[in-house]
Image 1 (cartoon, rainbow, N blue to C red):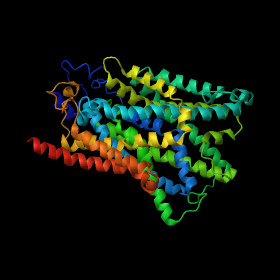
Image 2 (cartoon, rainbow, N blue to C red):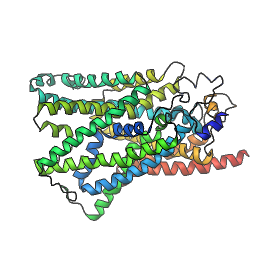
Image 3 (cartoon, one colour):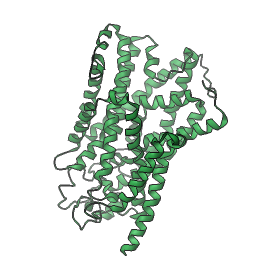
Image 4 (cartoon, helix red, strand yellow):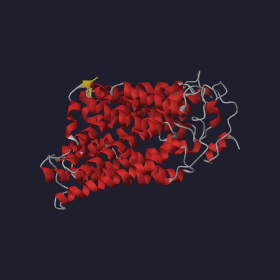
Length: 485
């Protein structure tokens, strides 16, 4: 059976690769040989990715801004349904070809042009890897001081902008993540299989505690801020748009995980339980806990670490600190490690393996001093926000290319062929149509996301970038083919 037919049928055996180009190939980038990921593994992957401080604070923040618990629930449910559909589209490509994101990108951007989307995704992941680790270390620092106030002197002197206790908490988290990362994708699968459920247990316990303190009566319709009907509608759609922007990163490289599944049914079922069901439930739980804190303490506490610190129970604080550490490791491994590990390997496959690429990412995330980045709104909003706006156009181009231009026909072996005979060579390994569409549509998405005057439509930058890039690429590709014929 040919590689193209194999890709079409979705069989689990990898296609044969005859003398692949060493500039494009290593064992980690090759089609997956073992398809061991089941429905639960995909479901647990989403639990690991969703159950973190950032998503908790995001959902709680929507409540503080004026949306009721039910409005937050419906807005995020809508967003997660759209994300579910997008993940299935990209997941199908990974499952049928068995290759990771940077290799899939060769289909539309060219065998060597694929380095551009890979680098964009890698840079975003590396920066957020450091920031997520730092935010969790702050939460752990708060809980450690609540457990032992005698450690306060360690917070009185700083080095490179971070005090001694902060460095200790950060480096412990960083090293624990690195320990998992160096063991490959199978270790990632085993870690996230128990990571997500463990966090659910702690979150449910926190919800039960706050419910009991609130006499088991928390309003799902009230909120701390009154909004007009029109403003509620705007906030509702804005919340749905923002959650899409947040998950646009992982939507782009979900094939990194789906490549290890035996069939598309596994991908769809795992995504269903992990996204519309689990993710929306976690968001609702976050809002319920925040609403309960408003009733119990007279203020809406959106930071779960601060909420735990008010319990004044040492075992609970210890469990809470461990939970935040596990949660950070889960989201970082899923969203911010796997992608740059493959992306960097794609740049120099002969020298950079998945493990080496991952360690380069981890070291880079430490060297950028993420606490300084996070304290700079300009960096977070303009640099990372601008790069994030590029992900929509990348997604639109890749999905249209696979489903509408190539109609699911892929010669997997030719993805590792750097010669002119490869259909993915285009012009010197670069597809000029993809680049010609990406540059203006990415610029448009970035302008919408970053220009202050366009703030009301900023949450929809991912939609705009994806839609315009998809349409433009479809029209330009058809025209290019017609001219070639």
